[in-house]
Image 1 (tube, one colour):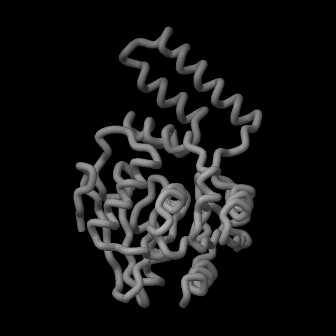
Image 2 (tube, helix red, strand yellow; image 1 turned 120 degrees about the horizontal axis):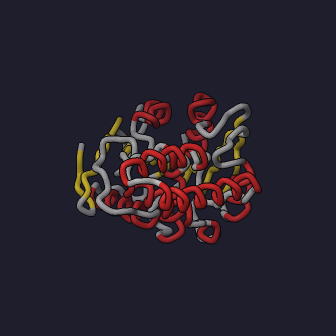
Image 3 (spheres, rainbow, N blue to C red; image 1 turned 45 degrees about the horizontal axis):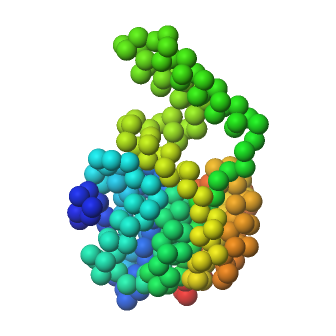
Length: 256
């Protein structure tokens, strides 16, 4: 199914039936199928709504201009309004967690219960290795502008991105989405956490390297009504790595 929001066609699916609605927001460059371990479980008891974020890995339309977390968040809010989704429970993985944090902190009555799964939203600690990569990339980009021809510049720049950039950034193919990625990661949502009033469950993989466990502990401290569950031997996709355990924990939190 497709709905137009902010001049962008948004692909979405509705699974199952029930009086209670569950909204699921996927991670960066993921899609509706990536969240199947969750929606396949909950569709037997709830109406589950899942969308593809535009410009990312699903079937929604590409962005015409760069968005940041606020633009993605307002799109989700308008999506909910057009589909008459009122105070659903909501699950967000990684980037989807960013959007939930932004929305819940600005619109206290938008959601009922919140599940943040390996959620992004906090800036990573700056290590020397990360600092060196950033400096090396910026210097290399400056150097390429001087020595490269127009014909070889893009190819060499892509090689530089793969060498020094994050895997997420290196795999982006369009300039609009590179700018979008930069806008997204530059927004630190730590101050938003203390504004969240919803009951919030944090679920994290203890082996998560993309959004390390220390981020979950900060969120648990800052979000007033929150609790943290750590899944052993699970990584950034803890809802896949420990899917049976994950779904039971979430079901108990949401009310069975």
